[in-house]
Amino acid sequence: MAAGEALFDLSGPARAATTALAQNWTNQLIEQIKVLEPGFRYDSVGFPQTLQGQINQLNDLRWMRAAAFMRKGELRPLQVETVRFIQQSADRAYAEGVALQKAGKLRIRLSAQEALGNFVDHQVRRELRAHYRRYRIEAAGTGPVRVNRRENDTAESSYRRPDARVGDIAYDVTLTRKTLKTPQVRGFFMTDFRPSNVIIIRPRQVDGQATYAIKRPEMKR
Image 1 (tube, rainbow, N blue to C red):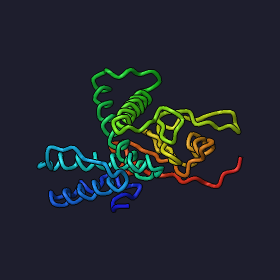
Image 2: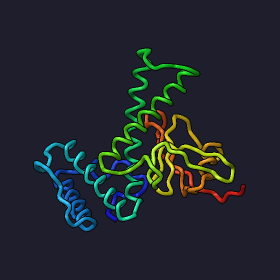
Image 3: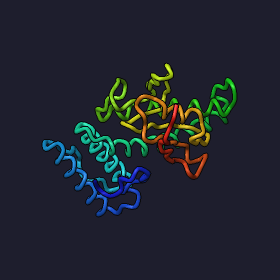
Image 4: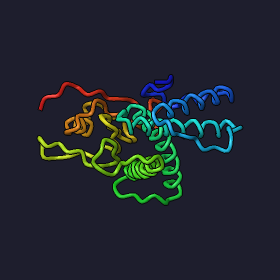
């Protein structure tokens, strides 16, 4: 795999890219996709001249590569891109939710914090579903990629709903810090798909350590 694919590489190569470096990464990504799908062609009107345009193109190609790997049965690149996307989406949703709350346009039932958290959850799931559809990634069925779907715990005749799941990774978007002692997190680990990690993703406006993994413990029922 190319550099920059560690699970917590949230910025990717584009952030510090010069035009030459971005062009090099673009060529590498296209070649990697062609190895997986020899007929692949990247439709473009030319290499972007702005930094933001280069970032957008690199992100687009990273997602295309992740989808190509998924079709070959390899989910790790998609796990990485999903972390990156959810983090960015959570940051946007939090900023929007705070603005709505200040304007008195966010419906509050139990508390302002609960209302803001629900808004962020809803927005992230909606954006993630749309993004998966864009890259022809099925996330509404019983496959290994899912958004807010039931994950059964047959031993306890119950279930949990992670915000997303890709293979053996569960993703949870939250405003509050969670640990292995959090009942919800332990519940994720008890489900039938037995996640290897639960990735906790918080808006960066809330916590500098916005994203972290909780590794599966040795568990006894």
